[in-house]
Length: 357
Image (cartoon, rainbow, N blue to C red):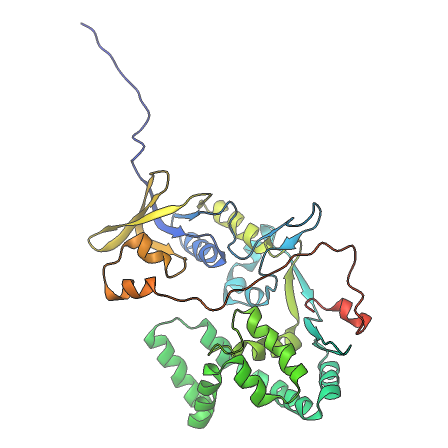
C-alpha cells in the first residue's frame, strides 16, 4: 500500500478577515482606523499609492536634503481637534511633533507693501489700518466677536452630517443667537469668499490677504460656502497662531500609522482595490488587484472621490448614477522650490518670520 501525504500552502483565495476594512490611507481613514482599533476592532487599511498620507505627505521632491510638504502644510485644525485631545498623548509617543508659529500668514503686493496676520492683535490691526481705517474697525469688531462665534462654527464643523445632529445644532444656535442671529449665520455660511470679503472690507489688499485662505481650503473666490474659511483662518490665526509639522506635515501620518500598527492594525500601500463585495445588500469585503479577497465583518469604509464609488460598487440606482456625474471644484496647483535661503522680500525683512507669504 502506498500512502502519500501532501502538506501544501493554504488556498490563496481564503480571505483575510477584519472588523473594518478601509479603502484609502489619507488622514481621515487613518484617524478612523485608530479610533476603531482603540475600541477593540481589528482594522486594515489599503492604499494604492506607495506611501500613506493622501495630501499630507512630505519628501525630497526637488533636490536631496530639501524636505517639502507635498500639499498640506497647515496642521492647525488637526492640532486643535477633538481627535487630538483624545489620542494626542498616544500620537506623541509614536513621534508626532508640532512646530507652533506666531506669524501665520501675510500677502505681498506689487507696490512693495504687505499685510499679515500674527498673534499680536494690535500689530495686525495697525497693519490693516495703514491700508484702511474702516477695515481696521471691522477687524476689531470681528476679533471681539470671535470668542462668541467660535463655539457655533466649530460645533458645526464637528457635527455629524445627520439630520438629527444638524437639527440639534440649529436648535442650540437659535437658543443662543435668536432668529435674526441664526439667519445671519446661515447667510454667512452660504456666501462665497468674494461675497463676504467685498461686503466686509473695502481694501482690495485686505480682501486678497484673506481671500487666499479660501483657496488654501480649495474654495475658489466664487464657490458658495467658502466664506467661512477666510474668516476662520484670519481669526484663529490671530487668536492661536498656526501649527506646522516638525520635520514635515507627514509627522501626523507617520504617528498614525505607528499607532495603528501598535494596536494590531494592518496598513498595506501599493494595493489597488478593484471591487467592494456585498452579501445580502451589505458591504462585506473588498477585492484587491492581485486577486486577494479581504472580508469585513462589520464595515467597509471607503475614503475615495465620489466618482470612484460606482467603479467599486457598481451602478445600481439613481444615486449611484449621479455619483458618476460628480464635478470637482477648480483644481489646485503647487510649485516646490529648493532655495539657498529665505527670500529677500523688498517689502521688508519682517516677512521672513511668516509661515505663509
